[in-house]
Image (tube, rainbow, N blue to C red):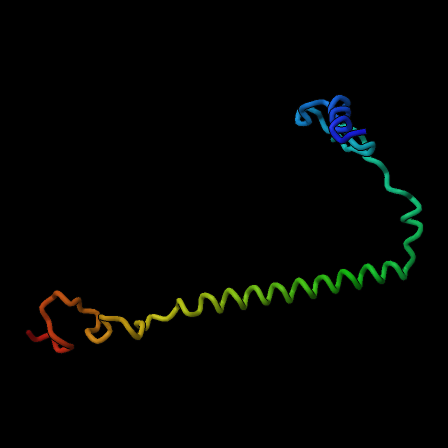
Length: 114
């Protein structure tokens, strides 16, 4: 069968505009009004003390990782803002040797005489 016939046959079986189709809901779709499914009760029976220990270990490990990430974030923020806190003029500041006087005020140098 030529490819063109296969494509034409496929187009005949499918709707032309796929965007007009509504998505199909899965069987366990939660509509909000429907009661929720109860989890498998065997899951809870299968939780032995060793599994609780593993869960607690995982939680503690996650807390440690979160704490490290928080410390790194705070250190990065402090480092990025620390250079903004200085009031010293930049080394190439054109007003640094005039101690804040503008060039057009008629003063010469630091002593304020004309």
